[in-house]
Length: 148
Image (cartoon, rainbow, N blue to C red):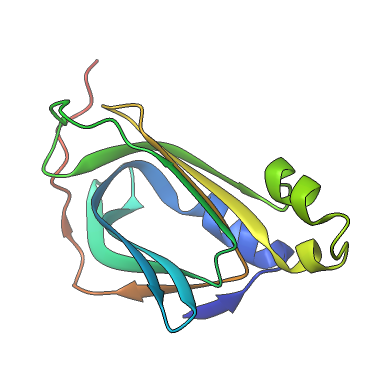
């Protein structure tokens, strides 16, 4: 499913079950002007039933990417568990950088911030299109059980 950024697209990303989903891989692609960030993850379909699906989320036409990845810390699962995300249309860095260049440009872009649970790592993106691809069937989630 390929989606261009608008209010509905931002709402869609915010409603996915991110908490305790497991990030497996991050790819940064800058070939032939294909400015993309690709996340491969076990995305929870439902937190209560702990069922996930291996998915690829491709952020296209990225104009800003910031990563603060903490390495050498043992993750709680096979991959990095996600704590939460935020997605909106207000990236202060990009808005300030482009406001003199083209004020209308930023109406087509969204800001996405992913925060990891066990390492505190963050990934911030500003993009104008994304695609979510299911790579596998749903299966039992491989993250550890909640600690409570």
